[in-house]
Image (tube, rainbow, N blue to C red; front, side, top):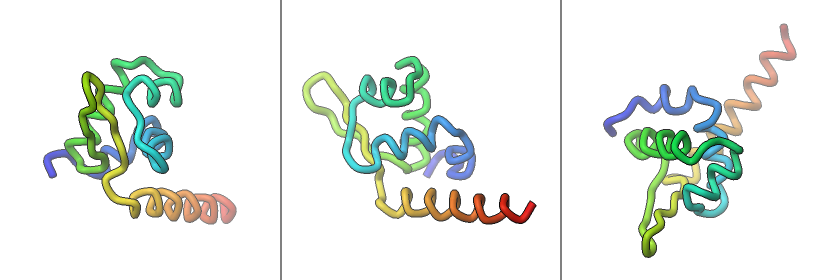
Length: 91
């Protein structure tokens, strides 16, 4: 793994991308539309996430499709969110 996993997960847009492609693979345009951000910014995030090993891509014709590399990634995000909610309630 070339990238820093925690740095990749520390970005809200990257977490949103993971949720967006958590159930089915999508191309860059679909992901950008899902997040309502520019395609170029989406591509930048996807590259970093590929480097971290969070996602995988496959080519079909001229398009690349992205998916979460391991189903446990979404589970970890959910557990982290739940823990954050519990801790926030204590404050």
